[in-house]
Image (cartoon, rainbow, N blue to C red; front, top):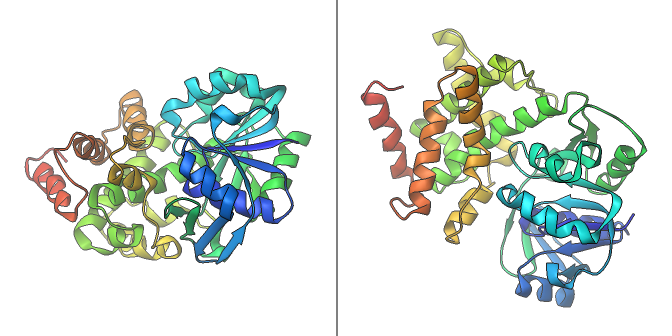
Length: 342
């Protein structure tokens, strides 16, 4: 297959480096011209938990002339429809789009290319872009994995092929209940990416401080309750049943879950949310596709989501210049609580 990683930012650069190092022919596509120039000139430099520089082939969207049989999508999903419509000229008739975006992006992807050509992939590792051509892998290599599947649970040769490609980087699990897997990833992103963006801290810092950990815990609880109301079974993450560990119905279990939160995120403690990276660059972020999805499902199924609502409010406030990412923002949750609204 002719393969493109469309949206070769922090994650896409790392993935492209691993695939290229393994001999896979892949094009890294990004609108960042300086990043493209650095990648082609110097290779993809991966720092952090590994240290390697790998020759890669990078392009801007305007430079694309090939037709691809597999597009790995890593752009911000709020632009999915326009991006995929523009990409049609660079796709074969049976091109697979495998989205690695946060939230529940399969819905918007399938609306453009069809459900049979849509695959989803959860990414259980993190990265941070450190300038042109340089990306930091922030997760331990032995903790990295992908979860791959389709919306309807269908398995076929193309799914197995995509699995074989991604296994060049790390283990890949084919998920029967892929939407349940998506919700497990959504829960983690809503809590830790959400609070990382609100506070300006890493996942570990957001989970470590007592005041922000309370927010993480309530965000997690809302995700669990909303998924249950929607009839969605949240799947384990790397063998750990996060619902069993972190759900609660009494004060003792709530206290135990609170203690577990920083332990659960320990291997990814150094990760800074991509939403936070966007905010620091003055860009709009994906909060409506992460915490906002929980809020929308909550409205649909009659479950209140005040903590996820507040994360959206604060992050939109940061985008509008009302706030800055800071642990001072945690007080906004406390004020909300004091009014008796939570």
